[in-house]
Image (cartoon, rainbow, N blue to C red; front, side):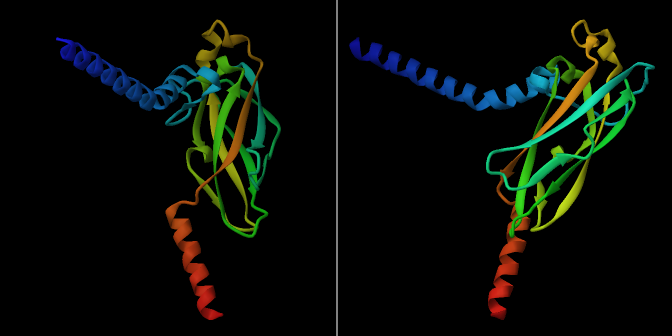
Length: 194
């Protein structure tokens, strides 16, 4: 009898551990999905194309750039702000420069402020959708195409927003396999010449 009780308790504990592990594994994808759907924490939307309606109301969009501690690139917006009509497609550019003597890969994290406007800020194209690799001394201008959804004027909290700040933070990632392979080939070629 005592053994059956211990086995039952052991199975319950194993079940709890497996359940908690599954929940921990699913937490990040679920949180990302939740933020995309609700605009929580300033997460923006991704759109297939421009909004169907353009209002006569305007909104000011400000642009901000930062980088993770120790990230070697220079990174800045090419414009500090622009005024767009709600629903109108806007196009902004950010500039990145790699001052190092080696390739550096980066990925941009982003959000908008005020947070309640995140659900209405839609990106059509953005450098933040993919990893970026800059070669030594390379300087690039990276576009972001966006619009503010006309439904913002119906939102009880977001409709009073007069400006939205779009912020990006670049952080370093491992070089993609193709870039690392090209670098290894170049290094091998240089070593065979010497």
